[in-house]
Image (cartoon, rainbow, N blue to C red; front, side, top):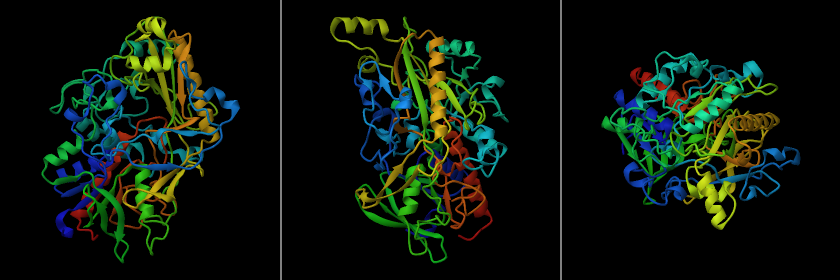
Length: 564
């Protein structure tokens, strides 16, 4: 393969990689996208029409989950026992004395579409003040741009995806918009309406959640049918995952090639320090090298630092693009809480759109008294997976035999859940490095995740748990049935920060455009560049906006004939 075959090579086909590919291809560049995981066919691979839909969750395919290891986590303290996870059927969930990974710990998908294949589809803009955490509060780091810089790119992404949202001032808060949402907001289901009444009684504003799910037919895709199972994969393509939006349109240009089941194992550099080629292994385990002009890494906040650290060489002994020493540092994970309870009557809470309602009142970084960093609250029955009878029986309706059957009939559809996600501040004990022993099938060291909750995270979790319980009580819940949080479990769908962006090359891995400070043809377009996590916003829309901006920067370099 000649160096001139592609203008840009992208590693990773998730939110950042797909958005960058679309922007570059539609502007005339030739792009190769390499994805370690498989391709998914929504109409064949998602099994929501089978009798096993509730137990199968998102369908695993060979190579669709990466391997990671975890360093020992912090001990659990009895004084925080009210933050331990539990349910009515089995009692306390984590019986160990330490925080533990829940399931895989890092909940992700390797595949064409990345984790948007199984995401709920929340489409959030970052709170403007969450971009100034260092200058305002002395924590995390400031973003090297402001909200106004990203706003046009948010709008482009929303228009391509077909985001449905409310344009009312109360729903927008400080996230001003230059254009309305392309589609009207979804109606709230009965359970969310009940939660909204309780929130209003506490003085909290409850509004439609911006969603990458179509409220009307759009761009050749049908409107949502409200099956409530976005996290299991959308067979109808009404959910705005990037495989059916950005990547679909990139491929339609004829200038984009996607190679799935292809793992990049090392990045090689030229004597002048620029990226020269990449080593990869395809599905037949055939190894090859691909020359590159410009390389975008979009592998996520775990895999991107892993690849950079594994690409250490004589001129970069601490890892590629790691002159600052910040590759792998500043990991920020999901800080979350869900409380669930049972009403005395059914409200068909399993119906409707997941996370259809949200409260932003505590999203500002100074909104929670005595705590730095904000949070949000949202309807969460579907995220708690309380949408089918099996999970009711296993988790929240105890008993056996005829009495249990009667209780199930009375209870099904009566569950209400409210979830909270909050700001995670970087700390020295939370980071990613390479495990000294464990390796994958290609001989590449596995990423090792270190995690530690700081005092601010625990205080925030206490506030989040208390507020969730208050809202449920106001909605008519007399007895809680289950609570689950990240005090005793590492359970992260959103991770950030391990290659943070910034203007100072001694403190950051990439600059404001996503370009390596010292490797001029290396770029990063994923959540690893986030200087702060935000106060509970889902990150995919911000990743896409950053990727579009980075792509425009690359286009400018190409048009100016900037040497690589």
